Each structure stands twice: as C-alpha cells, then as structure tokens.
Image 1: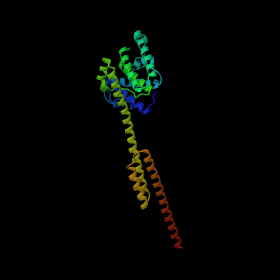
Image 2 (image 1 turned 90 degrees about the vertical axis):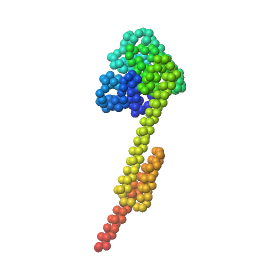
Image 3 (image 1 turned 45 degrees about the horizontal axis):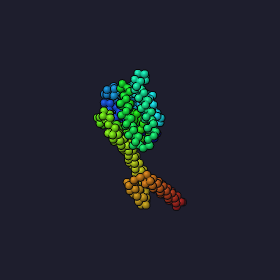
Image 4 (image 1 turned 135 degrees about the horizontal axis):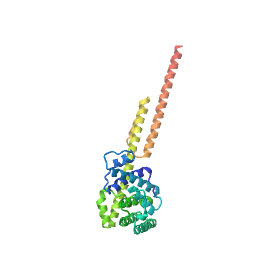
Length: 294
C-alpha cells in the first residue's frame, strides 16, 4: 500500500517524469517540469512533443496514485498506454489476440507473485523479471517502455516498496539489459536506482529539516534580542540573557530547542516583572514627592 505523503509524491512525480521521458529521448529538466506543472508556463523554447510528454506523464502518474491500492488489470495497462500516446481509446481488438492473451497471463502472474512473495528484495527481483517479459510481449505499436516502467512504479507503491525509477543517465545500460534479457544486471540497476530514490528523499528531508532548524534558531535569537532591547535590564537579567544566547548556538535536537524556548519565556516574564516593579517604584516616588510638597 502507498504510504508516501503528499510532498514526497510530488517529488516522485517530477523525478518519474524527468527520467521516464528522458529514457525516451525527451530532454527535460527539473525546472522545465516544475514550471509547466506547477507554475503553468513554458520556461523556454521547447519542442511541442516534450511539453506534451510532461503533461501526459503527469496524467499517468495521477492515474497510478488513484489506483495503486488495487491490483493492476489489463484495462489499466491499456489506459496508461492510451494516456501516454494521447489516443482517445485503445481498442483491444486492434491488438493481436495473441498479445492480449499474453497480457492477461502477465497480469495474472504479476499479481499472484506479488501476493505470495514476502521479502522486499524478492519483489524487486520479480518486478524486473516481469518487466523483461512485458517488453518482450510489446503489446502496443508505441510506448511499451514508458508503459512498462510506469507499471514498475505502480507495483512498488502498491507493495510499499521504494519506487524504482530508472534514471535517464542509465539509458544505455537499461537498453542493453532488455536487449540481452540480462535479468541479473537489470536487478542490480533497479537496486542502484532504488537507493538513489531513497537518498533523494532523505536529502530532501534533511535539507528541509536543516532549513527549518536554521529558521527556528534565528527566530529564537531575534526574539531574545527584541526582549532585551525593549525591557530594562538588571545584572541578573543580563546574565540570564547571555546564558540563553549561548544555549541557542548549541541546540542539537527538538528537546533542547523546547528547553531553551522555555528559558526564553521565563526570561521575558522576569523582564516584565522588573519593568512593572520599576514603574511601581517610580509612581510611588512621585506620590511621595507630591505628599512632601503638602
């Protein structure tokens, strides 16, 4: 079952589009994909076919996400290929009966072996084995590779596996594996790209966490300075401020962050009490001064 959050799915969709189209000799960058899909504009002079490839792959990815909790059917495969080729419909009657029968057998084998296999490594190996079979069947006049690689992503999401997206930089190695039915090297290539997908997610998470941490610490420091500048200080408060300032620079985790934040609240409260006491003493002195006049 797919347990990826929305942000990770968006990153995966862009990653999938870049590389699945790239293997098909469509040269688009991450900026191209983001501009077209998110900002809704074409960032540079691009061939129309490249723009259409991006839009069609986005449609395919959305279809996969909305259906990947269920088993793949022959109808799903026909639908994905139709989306990629932007054809109104693919009539099974236009595909040789032998190919259709092979597709039904392929789907039955895929779903059965995914159900009966318990190890993640084994499932990836099976997916690569069946990918070779699918590319041998070649049921469509065009788009067999793009369709087959989309089915790999579907199966990975359905099975809770890190998605296998073959990067376009490995195009030659990938094609050689298909050409020579080299299952062992195709599996190694899949694992290598699967690890890259894991690293990609981790790096994105680390970058986001680091950015969040920097922003949070900066906010703490700025708040400390605001309190210091807006409240009168005593020697004791000056020392407290210096201690908090020193603590901010060595925060390593959320627990430490929360402790320093609590110290900041106590420092602010002490500053407010000191200001209130000063104001009270000032008003009292003024009152005593007026009494002395009388």
